[in-house]
Length: 382
Image (cartoon, rainbow, N blue to C red; front, side, top):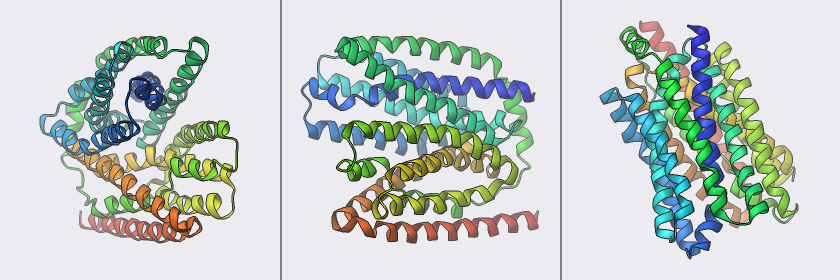
C-alpha cells in the first residue's frame, strides 16, 4: 500500500503540474492581455482582486459541501476541468468574455482545493502527511515555473497571444488523462475504510491553530511589496528572476520540511513565524533583497506543506474538507489584511515594518503554544 500511495501522490502532483502550466502561465500575462482587449487598469485590478477573493472565500463552502456529500472526487474533477476553459481565451474578442473565463477557473480552484487536499491526506497517511504535501508542492511549483516560461518563449518568438493560448490545450489534455488514470488507481474502498476507522480518532480543537495561521500570514511581506521596494535598486528585468528563485526555493524546501514534519511533527511550525520576522529586516532595513527573497521561498514552502499536514493530523477525515475550506479562507483573508497593512506602513516609513511583523509573529507563537497545550490536554483526557 505504501508504494501505491507514493504513486498516487505523484499522480496528484502531475495533475497540479499540468494545471499550473496552464493557469500560472496565463496569469503571468493576464494584465497586458486584458489591456489588449480594451480593459482599463481599474477593470484589470478589480477583476483580478475578485478572482482571488472567490478562489479563497468560496473554499469555506466547497469544503463544507464536499464533506457533507462525501463527494471529494466530484469536487476535485469539476475543479480541475475548469482549467480547460482557459485556452478558449484564444477566441476571446472582448475583455468581458476573457474575464468570465478567468473567473470560471478561479471558482474552479475554490471547488477543487479542499476536496483534493482531503484525498491527498487520506492516501498520504501511508507515507507521511508532510512528505505527501511536500511531493505535491514540488511538482506544483515545476508547473508554476514552466507555464510563464512557455508564454515568455511563445510571445517572444511568435509575438501574439493566440498561439500561446492554443499551446495550453496540450497540458489540458494531459491533465484530463492523468485524472482519469488517478481516479482508477485511487481506491474508493480504501477511502470508506479509512473514514470508518477514523471515527474513533481524537477530536482536537483547532481554534488556537487557526489564530496561529492568521497572525503568521498577516505578518508576511509578500513579493509584490518586495518587488515595489527593490525596483529602484536592481534592473527591472531581474525582478522576475527573483520571483523565479523564490518559487524554486519553495519547491525544494517543501520536500525537506515535509519530511522533517513527519519526524518531529508540530515543532516544525516554529519555522514559519521565526523566519517571517527576518524578511522585512533583510529587505527594508539591511538591504539584502536576495537573501530576503530566498527566505520568502522557504516560508511559502512551509505554508504549502506543513500547514496543510497539521490539519490532516488533527482533524478526522469526515471533517477535513470543511476544515481545509476554513484554513484556506483564513489564509486568503490574512494575505489581504496583511498586504494592506504593510502597504500602509510602507508609505509612512518602510523601516518600521519589521516592528509590526515582529509583534504579530510573536502573537502567532503565543497561539501556537496554546494549541500545543490544548493538544496535550486532549491526549491526557483520552
